[in-house]
Image 1 (cartoon, rainbow, N blue to C red):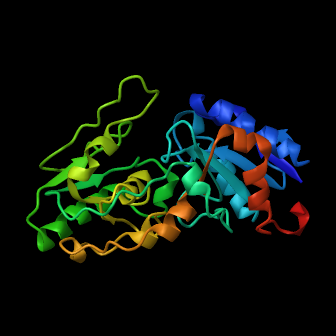
Image 2: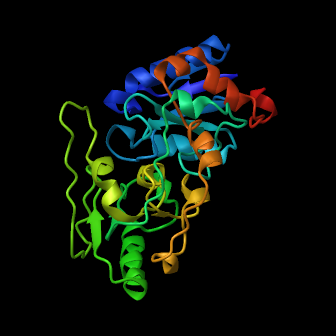
Length: 284
């Protein structure tokens, strides 16, 4: 099997992660080829089509059109800058993730589910980048405006819009904003988790804050494509009576969406994805 990679199309903090991933692939006997559009599969960094990663969009579209799998590496949210997302063909719930599970991995990652809250007064709309391929065919601005409009029908609770730290929506009309604050002594972590338990609910399309809310015991309202969807809400009409389901099976799943550099270098998560038999005959 031959795997294409693109070292100039990676975020600066992702370069060593990509190297670990490639080391793991080579350990499995996979031939890695730089800047090729004619391999059996490809690996890209992130679904954000901007800056250094802009050219990844054409790589992704090319390999998807050829029905060849695309590994996607991305910054994780379980232990930021310590664990890294890895999936096939995306980074949301519609991607191909590792299965079956090691039922004890979430404990080794110290993923402790905080009991569900039934308090809080504010609804937080946690935004994600508008230039991300995670949106699919959904227009981000239209989605946010629709959320705010629908909320007025079902609740009188104050609504706070929290923009993504690196993507500000200039054409949104919101009554209250919460400016993310960078945590000191971190590379790029912000204060979302520190204040999350004061929220009645968190609304997010399909990025990390939905799952972060669930882990911290705060009901989340997400799109069906979110990794949090199995234990979250998808109908804003339930905003005053959100579901708070059992999360034990879900946390085992979410623990297999992110990996350390050491694990990537071992090839273990890559092999687990290969074991799912997702590759067409020419990739065998």
